[in-house]
Amino acid sequence: MPEKLIDLANKYGVSRRTINGWVHSGNVDVTHNEGTGRIIWDEQSVKNLDDFVTRNNAAHENNRNLETLPEFTIGNRRYLGSKTRMLDFIGCVVEENTVDVHSIADIFGGTGAVANYFYERGKDIVINDILDSNYMAYKTFFGNEDVDWVRIDTLLRRMNELPGDENYVSRNYGDKFFSMENARKIGQARDFIDNQALNERERAVLLTSLFYAMDKVANTVGHYDAYRQVMDSVDPIVFRKPIVEENGAQRRIYHEDANQLVREITADLVYIDTPYNSRQYGDVYHVLENVIDWEQPELFGVAMKPRDRRRTKSDYSTAKAPQAFDDLIQHINARYILVSYNNMAKKGAGRSNAKISNEEIMQTLEKRGRVVRHELPFQVFTTGKTKVDNHMEYLYLVEVNVEAAND
Image 1 (tube, rainbow, N blue to C red):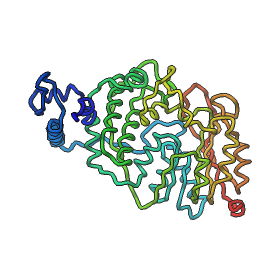
Image 2: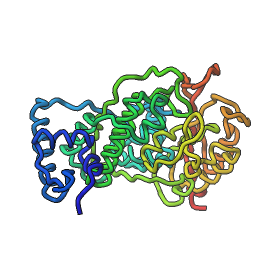
Image 3: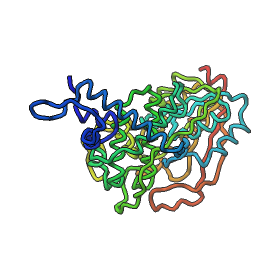
Image 4: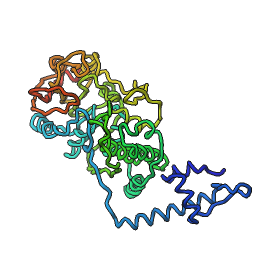
C-alpha cells in the first residue's frame, strides 16, 4: 500500500514541500498516477527517496568538517529547589559524619545533581522522581543500555536543521512560553524523535536534549507557572549532546512514589529533599511534561495547563505533608538518613508557606535514631518579591539505630 507524504516527511524530519522540491528538481525518481499525474509513494519511490536522503545526509556530514556539537551536563538547567550550589556542603557532611557509605538513594531526585555528585565519586546510586522529564534525564545520564553515540550525534544535527512548520507546540505555546520560531522547532523535533528506531535509552537521550534546550530558551523565570508578558527570549533553540561519563558504580533508576519506593529498596544512606510548599512540581513543569508525554491534550487557562494533572500531585505540597513524611521515614531501610530543609518560610496555609515544620521534622527523625542538624547560610532563589533574612539550608543527619531499623 502506498505511503502518505506526511508520514514520509515526519520520518525524515523535513517538510512536505522539501520532499516535493527534491522530486521536481530530479533528485528523486517517483511513480506518477497515469490519470491524475499525482505522485504515488509506492515501494520503489520510497526506496529512491531513502537512497537520496542517505546520500544527502552523508554529504552534510562531510561538509561539516567535523564540527563538534555543543554539549550539556546534568546540571545545566533551571529547577526550583535545585541543590547544585549545595553539593560540596552535602558531600562534606556525608564524608565527615558517616562510615562505610557505599550506596546512596536520592528518592526525590529532581535534576539528579545530588545523585550525580556521589556517582562521580564512585558510589552506587538509586535515583527516583515522579516527573517524566526527570526520569528521561536519569535514563540518559545513568541508564545501563548501550547507546550508539555516533547515530545520536547525527540525529541531533538533523534536529537542529528541522524546518519550523506549525504544530501542537506552536499553536499552544508559541509567543507565550517560547518564541514562535522556537515553538515550531520544538514540535517538529518531538515528532522527529518518535519517528526514529531507537532503544529506550537512546530515545531518552534525544528527549533530554530536547527539554534541556527548551529550558535554555523558555520565556520564563525558571518555571512554567507563568510566562513573561514581553518576549525576551528570542535566541534560536539548539539541541545539544549530553556529556555522559560512566564508571563501575551501579545505577538503579526508579519512577514511582517515594513512600512506596522506600519499602522496596535498601541503601547505606537515603537522601531526602521533599517539596517544601504547595507548589506542585507537576504543575510548575507542566510544559516539559506535556512535550515529553506527547499526548497533546487540550490546554486551559493563561498558563496553558492540561486539565488532568493528578498523577504528579504530591502529598508533600499539602496539609498531609507531616503524615506523609512520618510514613516515609519509618519505612526507610538504611544506616543513615539525610534530609534537606530550609527556613525560607514558616509553616502555614499560604502557597509559599512550608507544609511541615522544623519541629515536626525533628520529632519524626528522632524516632529512628540520633539526629544532628548541620546549617549553611544560603542565598535563596525566589520567584516573588519576598525578602528572606538569615536564610539557612539545613541538613538533618540521622544515624539509624540498629534496634529501630529491625523493628
